[in-house]
Length: 341
Image 1 (cartoon, one colour):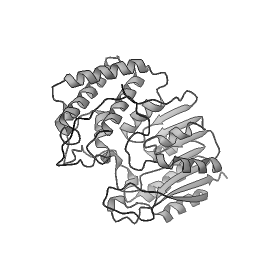
Image 2: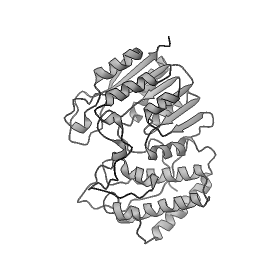
Image 3: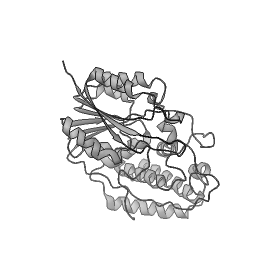
Image 4: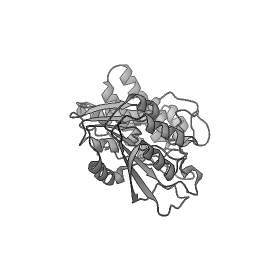
């Protein structure tokens, strides 16, 4: 198997990877504690950085694909990579010999992927489920192999980086290569992985530091990454529309008009010493899908009601589909030291 995928090697809107040094310089200056809750963990890159300086790290995200990825990277110590490489190579070899149509290539071949690539992807997904059910794979091996499939298809998809649409009138070449992810050494950490609504997690989970990076605009992540969700859940739902999406589910209130209310509820419920919140100023974007559901002033007021809050900012180039120009775009970082009366 050539080269392996690291945690940050995926395309994801709102990814904080390039901002990590700035975020953590300020976290280290202003926060203390041994435990962290990354309550909208997304790609997991922020949680990975916290591993270096904090014993307990809790990751929460409501996407099924992110839950699998977190288990693969953060919760698979001791996995036998010699065995995993052997399984992956055998599956890759068999997939290239397979000529039978499957759910994945029937729907996505010739659109999001080449027909041949989609057939190989669907074949491997079916085999992974069969190997788990027959107990020929341990659960942590299954997570690594499934997360590896997610990373492998994301790397070659005929899209701008999400799955709301695909490029049309374009020849799609065969590019699929099944490559493994490289898991993280978390033997010195206490890892907990959740897939739950953030406001419910806030009622039951405590930590010294809570990192909060919610979606602020109308882009529903479960819809933007529907193919990855479909691949991971593997329920083979009926699909609709040009983008071939299933019926809507797992929708976030943070991408709706009541975002301010649910954010305020979240902040009120959290039991912690420090809140670390990121925000970007796209509220006045010309694109309705990019417009934030909470204004900078609203989020500032909500946090300051909780306790003393520092507001930091940094110029940053925002994700842009090409339709909107963001001038003077900034990323904001709020650090709140919570009062415990």
